[in-house]
Amino acid sequence: MKKFLPLLAIVILVITIIYGHYANKMDADVVQGYYRQMLPAATRYEPINDKTARAIGADGKVTAYLGVSSNVGYGGPILVGTILGPDGAVKQVNILEHKETPSYINKITQAGYFRQYTKKKADDPLVLDYDLDRVSGATLSTRAIAKSVQEVAHVVADKELKLTPKKAEIPWKVGIKEIAVALLFVLSVLMPRFKRLAKFRLVFLGFSIIILGFWLNRSLSMGHISALFLGYFPLPGENLIWYLVLFGALGPALVTGKNLYCTYVCPFCGLQEATHLISRVNLPLGQYLKWFRLIKEVLLFLVLFFAFLFINPSFSSYEPFGTIFGLNGSSHQWYLLFLILLTSFFYRRFWCVAFCPVGTFLDKVALLGRKIKGVIGLSPKKKAGKVDVNVEL
Amino acid sequence: MLNSELENKQENKQGSKQGSKQESINPGTESKGRKKNKMSTIFLWTVYALTILFIILVVCDNWKS
Image (tube, rainbow over all chains, first blue to last red; front, top):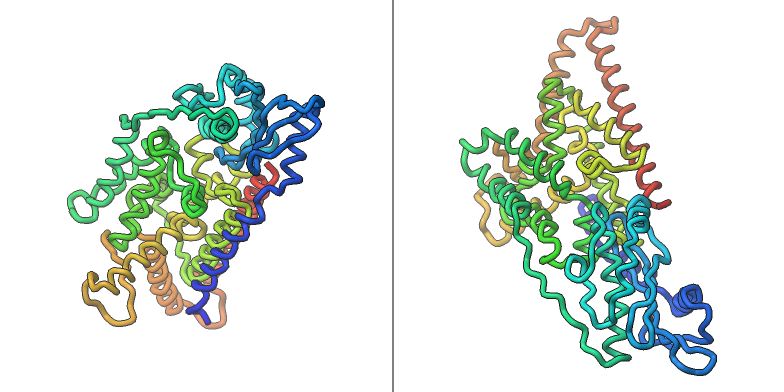
């Protein structure tokens, strides 16, 4: 029975993701309700597609085009309503519903972010940092809103106004940030191969705390992993670091069969190593480890399950990475962080051992990598029935 | 260090510690070692339960927002 539990978990997750996609589709009545809320003066709304319509006035003429669209910001989806005039000029953009972190929405509203849309046309590219300005400190939220407006406007331009939407030509941004992150991941692959380099693991983790942690606040989280399964990919030109972090962690785990990210790169692991260095205390977890391991796997399953059910990558993400490195979080997130850091003075890497769903996922990927290697005959010969844990340090 | 490797190390460490402890225990009296062990177990499960509680609260926050 135990053997089939992982398979059962995968089957449940696949069913959940399919169900989630169907259950989260907006039905026509709900969309009509949003149209009425946005433009109550219209007598009826003729659908252009499932989320865009023509608003018809009392005289039977098109008074406006309108549509709703949802994209994921930092903490969750933002449903945006867009109204365009009969000539294709953007008239109004507003948030109808959101599950985003409220502080980001307040920031966007206070900055007067929506004003810039009134100068735009339906066939404009409507891309952040190209023809739209971002709100500093709420980039992901403003990008999600811009994408939602673009989706509606381009449907109107294409299907109603017979205009070809202009495309934004965004060059890939490869700056100092991207190079620093790429270097971290390249070195993490090289380190275990050279013993001289491996000695500097803690120093390397220190750099990671500074670069991936406090400078960029882009450590790998369950949000990345859930987004990968849900198909929420940002444009590489806009967010190259997202790809570097995700594939820099998953790729080596799959290819080498070793979870190198947790060992060499994770800035939160680095912080816990630092607390351990200060206290030099490592109380044994002993007999309880098997329970922690089991609960950690259950936690990973639950995080993915809820993310898939609500089609929201960060819905069930509970890691305190953003709290410490972004210095931004709710009171409960701060309490959780304090507790974890305090405990890591007594138990080495307590979070990694007992709670981290990211580490558990990467361990699974590494295990899959080893199994694939075994099947295709690339792994070295070892005793039957034993799984190689690949110890370097 | 891999998570699983770290866990294995800690498991071995605990095993050897328990063995040496058992040798030093006098029958019939509760040794200091055993008391210490009990205290550390209580501490461990307290912080564990508190962490789980805060994880649930964080997820509830996500749900509400």
